[in-house]
Image 1 (cartoon, helix red, strand yellow):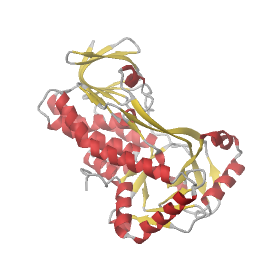
Image 2 (cartoon, one colour; image 1 turned 90 degrees about the horizontal axis):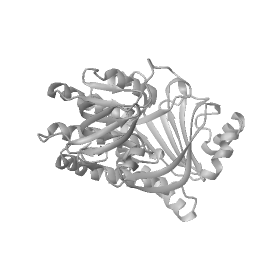
Image 3 (cartoon, helix red, strand yellow; image 1 turned 60 degrees about the horizontal axis):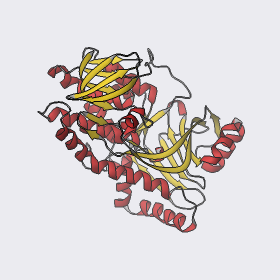
Length: 396
């Protein structure tokens, strides 16, 4: 039997970020934190053409700066200096720039492997106790916390359990926490591509008949592609040879970056908005994709989770109540409720509006893009949402 103060179930980007946010004060207070993760991190960072990536908002940069991690992340981060938003076949477009917003960048694109490497390297083994590879197979509430049963039959008792095991969390289901699901009937096709021209730090978001398409700048003049299609069409795209696939993508995106020359491995992600009906119980917090899983085209999911992490760490460290105290956890939930509601609504509405080919809605969308370009207040609001700075309590 192992006894810890906090057990974080899921050592991915969200779980590891929370461990780092708690680490300094945990050391002073004598807290023991267990980080339980089924997949062992690699010994070192291995560059790969096909590496998956995350778009970090400018607000997320400020959070990582506060944790002392940004200098390491920045070594492999590609700055988004401009965002070009357009609608295929229509005249309107909106352009956002870091210079106009008075910030170094609107956001940053970082390979997940590098971000994870930076986080794991920053964790202090004297405070954060890795259980990896290990899987939590069962959880049961006790008088003063939770008892976890691992796949090797180890038992861990904790005062506070953090459920950060992803959008398909089996433990969430095991605990009877229901989810609200809104399917989009779309699948995102994720890949890295190489264009003919330098991307020069510009991100593109383009709305096509099949659904939204995004190209985000990466190192070595690669771009991260997120291309949404009706789910029924994705199998066809996966089977296309490279030349035919690039030709179809070129037709949808255009020639702003010249000819599209190379595409790596294509991976499909069915899209559904998932929200857990409960995010806190006594001695329990649901975090990350287990709490809310958003459409990737608006680039809000991980950034919202990171704001949740910061708010949870701040609330726990400011409280004098025992770890797991329900009133404290409800205070955290109340702090983040508005941010989550606004971010989910922004992501969902942008996705639905820009995934339709109905003439009236498409015309309204066109006027909306034109309005963003012509009306500075609207454009600034949109930019602040994109930067993860549009919600109360974000770092300024």
